[in-house]
Image (cartoon, rainbow, N blue to C red; front, side, top):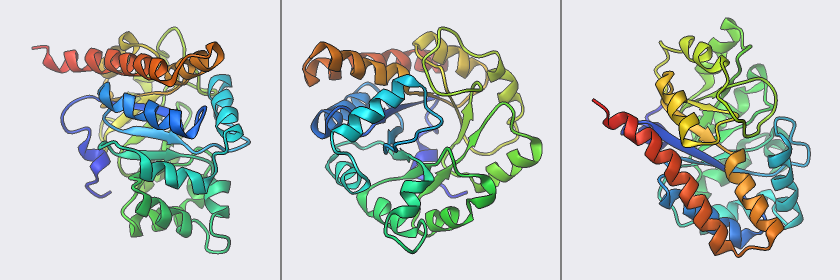
Length: 273
């Protein structure tokens, strides 16, 4: 574990970590949407690099991935996207290992990580990479100063949990429920039990999967999390705006408002006596 910009983002209190698919629905609109999240108070921003077979994603994010791919997003364009972003918060790429491994042909994950570092990325999450096979990516990330963020599920065994934590830096991503991503009407009862297992971990712990409102975020922080990850609720704002033919400015305002709703809810907790 190194003292990264990502970890430092959790130092001032509960962190809001939003997710958007880069390039959804267009390169230019997506730049505006990411910047709107920072204006709304995001501490760290996760950016999805779209892959054609996103096994961990529910329908909302699958649709966003389709829109992004149709708009021409590729790993090469993703790095250009990072370089054009005007934000100051740390950035994390969430993608699938095939894209990382295939980039730069014959040197495993190292060319992708090296390019990511020069483009301004701070961390990487790879949902489909088993801990047992993460060594090369972990080594490349350490060499280039990037955090490798691992995901812990409610069913993760104790031995596997220790392995995932040993690979992780930045923050530990706690999956609040089983299944795929997607906004829900409630917070999973599994969340508190998952967090109880992690009380001795030195890393910040951020909870995702199903959080869609300020009330949800507040409940998760009260359960012991250091941060909340919100994806589908934000991605759906983009999807609704796209289907309605709304301007990027209108959609950006809604994203900023949702970001501020969640940030305000968890910041108020910190201010309570």
